[in-house]
Image (cartoon, rainbow, N blue to C red; front, side, top):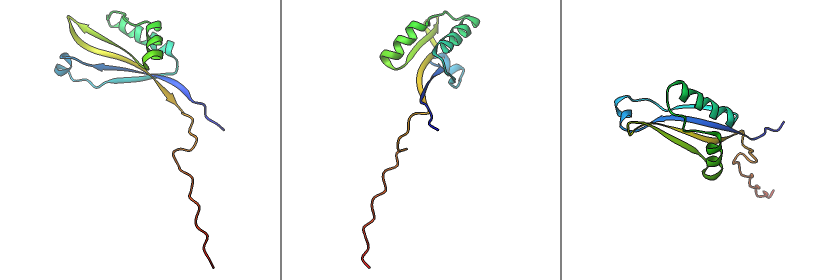
Length: 111
């Protein structure tokens, strides 16, 4: 059975700026199998927590095609608070040789 390579989307929220030194927080990462669902989840959580909706599907899609990733910074009164980054990842990449080289032939031994 052959596995198919599939693109998944890694969404990371990373706390940045001077406020991150006051309250240390590890980055939060979640994965989605669908870009639309990833963007919808980010938008809904931003709205739920009172942040401005600065993200839309078209901008994310365009950035992924042009640059390979998308990010957007969020700030309060000019101080950066966190960055949302969306990056495509390949799940089950096609592995032809697994990096294993062909076994060299052994020299024939004389009897």
